[in-house]
Length: 333
Image (cartoon, rainbow, N blue to C red; front, top):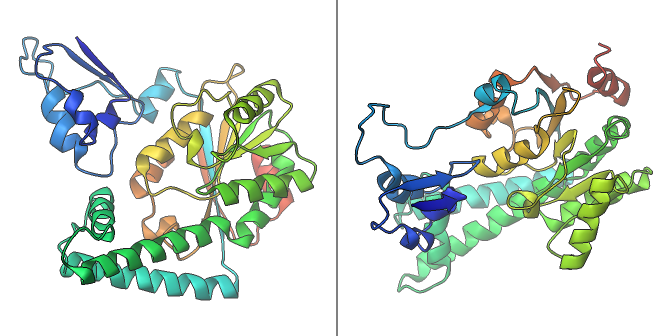
């Protein structure tokens, strides 16, 4: 019997080598059977597909458990979602347009002239990264690849660190004081540090949890978060997978990931069953008219699945204030 824990990882070229044909019985385990490349179709589906179907149970590879089933089986907490959009400042908007135009222009060249796959995004990024290394005779492709990665990185950092997201976090402060524990998800170390500092200045025991900390310090902060000494933990991707994080009541996504798998991992940190069957709450911060905006298709599959099963989904207006947010949270509308 072969048991592949976190089986989605075995869709990578290197890890797929462990999927040996000698094993007749095969079990793959994961909370997020998702990848942004073709690893599932290329490696996992062929390997884990049943070769014999004595019981005529259908073609299901591994029984899944979506939000609807998890809620019905009471293995997930009931939850609600609040979408809070902000605008860039005028200077940030100019920067964003510059990076966005450069990224789009370079992406077009990479797809049309250098044969990078348009979709899925993970396959595109893998091809671009390889071209950027310069191990080829096509200097032009290397230049376009590096230009794209540079613009993409700057655009992402700008959205992650924009000033008005921190202002939105301040709006949520009264709500966070009512929660036992809150997780704030960011994309960068810098934005995690800024988010924690913003809340700490308001009197909230909030700290970042990042790869810049020593292992001992990370362990200490998780322990303090579990005990209640720390009420808010702000972290980039280091919390997405493989870390035993205490249950939290509220999750705030300051910067959403393009990866559906990462978004599902983040959701899973918040919707563990609550002892008193109380609602979990999820806030998604995004910048209007950018790649983060749900109205422009950002995370459409992930958000549609959430919206289908959430107890309530609210898109807050631009001018929402602390009192209105607090009343929504306390069901005093």
